[in-house]
Amino acid sequence: MRIGVSPLRIDMYGNSSVHQAAASGTLEVLQCFLSKGVDVNMKNARGHSPLDLTTEENTKKLILRATKTIKCENKACNSKFDFKNISYYCEVSHKFYCKNCSVTMYVFNTHESVEKDRPVCRSLEVQ
Image 1 (cartoon, helix red, strand yellow):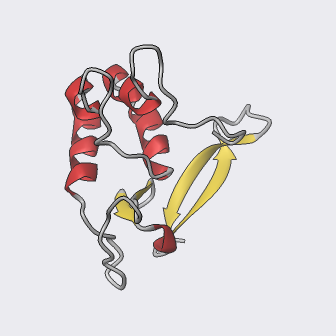
Image 2 (image 1 turned 45 degrees about the vertical axis):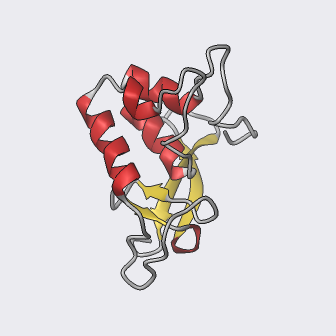
């Protein structure tokens, strides 16, 4: 994603990367996508949302939480989420924030990594 590859890219079956992360139960990857503000309600070519394809309980819980969070969880903000004001998942607080109440930075994926390539969203509340 650091070099511009979109997590919304569609494969030949109409699945986005978010659908693939949900179907494989890859929680870390899903958290990474949510930190970039992806839509977890998007449908694939067959009309399935990522939740419909979820195979792992923790992944399912996170997607359900994302769909049920309708406003920024910064108590001083509380702006409503919609197609213009999308939510960003903070991996520190495990809450969803609007763009104005969060910041995305890139970190090393592992201690062997040579480039900061993993996006991480942090709420301004926990900075």
